[in-house]
Image 1: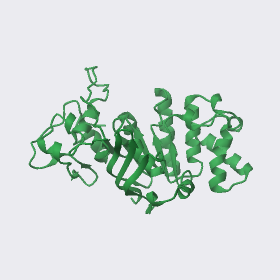
Image 2 (image 1 turned 90 degrees about the vertical axis):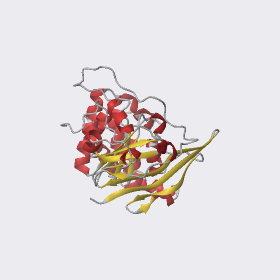
Image 3 (image 1 turned 135 degrees about the horizontal axis):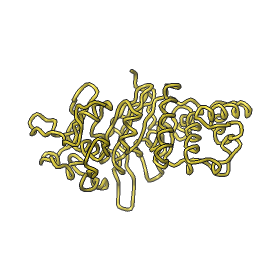
Image 4 (image 1 turned 30 degrees about the horizontal axis):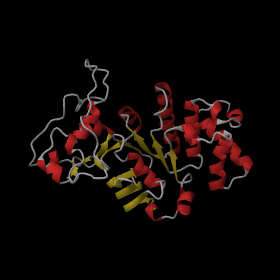
Length: 339
């Protein structure tokens, strides 16, 4: 399948009172048409910064893309002006943010908020835009859309507000939808409904999705491919099956070992010891070396290149070097098991 989005050697930094924070350090990602790509990792790994750089939403003047490119349909978004990006956002690439209450304007009706993007990007009349807003509310499963379109955000539940945010993001039929922790603030039942909704909408619209999450259960339910980020870098990529059942990086092993398992007699969850690196003074070698139980001297001094595990599976880990000792994944990972 053809790539609709490519991120090549992206570097993003922030100016702070402590100096320059190198939040994203050479990220490479691809997204194919109609695909769902999950980006996973701990807080501070660079997931949200990467997608905000894609959207041109880095806080200014502190945040900036230092180098690299973001190709959307072979057009480098990092070279576009703010005005050009405004035309692109909403119409070609949309974003669903984490907290629906802060994404919606409490002083405007739901209908007006959906109509705003439609009228700006599609030049529809007010009547046609309202009709489209009602259709979108129906599409995302809001009952009585003709009445609900006149109401305000405070009159909707949390799950309903998130559906409205999704309706706004889909209003202009974007080719790429970026969802930043779209279910974090919702209870488990509503989470499942929102994920099912997004899967259904993806099938109907063939929209490509970038899903940012720390919840590996969400990944298994939604994505076809996974990129694991740590310390501002992508340290492993592969299909969902490859990441869940044939992981190669010790950090990925740690993430998977920390997942609750319904078939396990041990109720204690495992945690990765230590803390993520300080990206105002990033490590020279592998960013995970200080927390890795299998770290060697070379890990602390040099960042490994990507190794091809398969055509679709890559990892940046010195353990994949033929000169390294052979280390097996922990028993907490069901390598090769049935899904």
